[in-house]
Length: 292
Image (cartoon, rainbow, N blue to C red):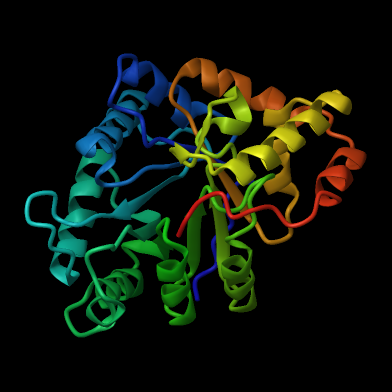
């Protein structure tokens, strides 16, 4: 298993390239001292990687300690996600980014595959292992939303990194068993979307981009009330919940604008008293919130 030492916070670039100001934001992301940058082959149809690559070229190379992580995606036209597709996906990623290797490349949302297909001869996972052995990528990961699928891949023992999103937050804990299993294998754990798709940052009425069930909405309301009682910025508390967890090595925060990037530092540094986290824990186990 290849060790990876990520920054505690990773800047998510899933929205980079699908809105105005991509060049300015890409420049800011690769120069930020807040953390590494996470993208994927299919984010914004490849425009996220392209924008980051253009920024790298403008800078004359990756500045300072900045690192880019990316992910392999299925063929956008055919849906094929075999070993050959993984290799093509990496070639596309490296070409867009203008890099000759990546410290981490992840199998991203393999929903159209069975585990046997992914792990078998000619499959996506053997291709990732081969690329890792060649040194073209430093570590390999599984990145997906469906916990049952993520757990299957974790249990293979083939991966260095696991990434789950929206399922381990201040108000949800459904990913906890998966993260514990990954920890037991010495894997690096990436926890993405600590704000639940914005709910814990801007008060949106959905969670994980879906409507909230009534019992879960009530739980979120109770946590929000506790934040008010303790004088706590809910967004700061949500971020720091993930950052302080012994199960999490790195927290991925989606950055959609330079304003969001500028706001991140104060959230990391904000004072959140231990009494607030104790009060949240006293509410008991939260409802699931996001269906698998």
